[in-house]
Picture (cartoon, rainbow, N blue to C red):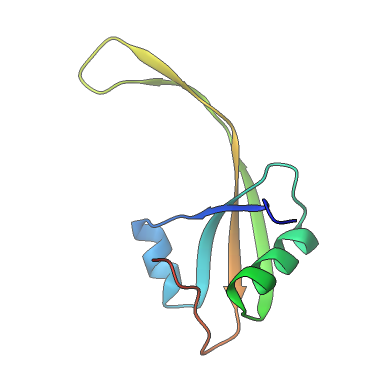
Amino acid sequence: MENVIKRVILSEKGSKLGALNQYFLEVDTKASKPVIRQAVEKKFGVHVLAVRTANMKGGLRTVRGTRMQKVESTWKRAIVEVKAGERIETL
């Protein structure tokens, strides 16, 4: 359970959701919603209200300005909603 959360994702969409007490996390691809909930509550000391997950498909991506391509791996994203007044410290 200690390696469930890989990182907090900082993006424009994530900062908009931050106003609604929701945060983007990159999690282990095999982690379930109850496991993600427990890991977030233990690591950040917050009360989790809801967890939504999505598998983000990897694949070939064109490198900007070149004809080269790189392979991106598949990963899992979780949107975690925490109790009002609590925050997940990103830095």
